[in-house]
Length: 167
Image (cartoon, rainbow, N blue to C red; front, side, top):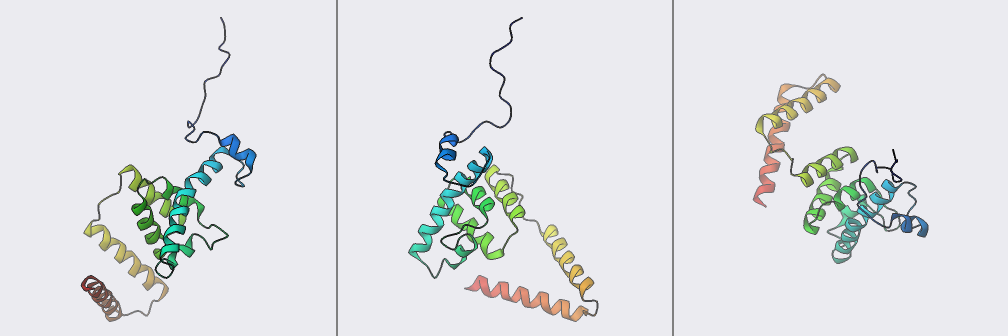
């Protein structure tokens, strides 16, 4: 029996071709093919962010969450953003993540859900459970919290949301 001279390739197929060329040019510090791919995916949103910041520096202060001009932060989030196709969607999600200071793992997971179309619809019961958990967590750390304080805080928050809707 003759054995095949070429082994069957295993693993994820390459999305980017020319990774060896990028490695030889030393364009990024990544040592693996996957690291280089992540670097390449992050280039597009970084370019969009810098272009938008140049147009409106005051309104785009949140871009500092990702870069200070010389250094790039949250490269994993940027590479997840780069997998989205629409420039407006990239900027919108980048702003939301930066303003909320979303942890990297959560941001990447949400962006993956958005990209694959598996994002769940918001539900009132789920929101109520999240609010209940947050209040219980606060009470655990501050046992002298009264029910009146909790109700007042929730009402003030609701009033603040109503004011935002009017603007």
